Image 1 (cartoon, rainbow, N blue to C red):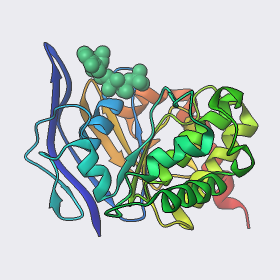
Image 2: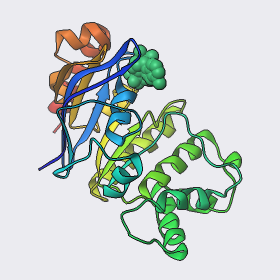
Image 3: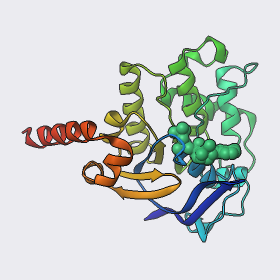
Image 4: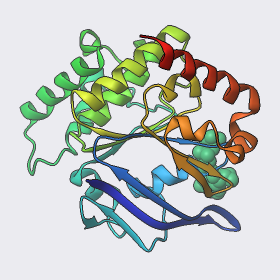
Length: 257
Ligand SMILES: Nc1ncnc2c1ncn2[C@@H]1O[C@H](COP(=O)(O)OP(=O)(O)OP(=O)(O)O)[C@@H](O)[C@H]1O
């Protein structure tokens, strides 16, 4: 089933055409990776979906409802949550209180304080930092702050989660952990995910579809295996060495019993 359907999504900032008539379909259960060079329009596309920047489109439907004229908080209530590339928690609130702010935007009509805190604690457990609930954000490592950002979005009980570079600045072990967490959120919590991610090697093994943006236009879409074969994508973004290595890895995995 199609969860999100966008047709001809365009965004311009003054003279800059950040997105030009991009079509995007996200199916229920997808982990869809948005890739492309710096400035390609990836974050802008997440902003257009979540309502954070004014966008034009022929249609933008979520779960069958036209959302293009809805404010961000209305889209959040319908089940669209997102994380931000630069994590900016409320410094004077504890970790659990920060997440509780997210829980206030869940679909429930009047979330009570106890329900909101309970939901926040569940989300912290889901991302693995329940033991940090009563600390302040400044006491967290970079990786834990990313997990806080994820928990805040999960507390909104979304059907669609938009992740903007949640692995930026993380080391190898932390990236592996985050990958496993993304898989867990998708498979076990049943949440559809659109992820903007530059750490290609890692995300290739987790996503089922990739959409490639270049100068605000969609230049390719398909399975990871198809995308590494696309001459246009190799030239615009992946580079030949990465594509060759990825193809070799895929062949080795396929040959394993
Ligand atoms: N608020 C804004 N005002 C003016 N121009 C903007 C604004 N936001 C984005 N842009 C421009 O729109 C284009 C797309 O930017 P966007 O941040 O979406 O790219 P991106 O693919 O996410 O890049 P990166 O990988 O570097 O995060 C860029 O040319 C950028 O400079």
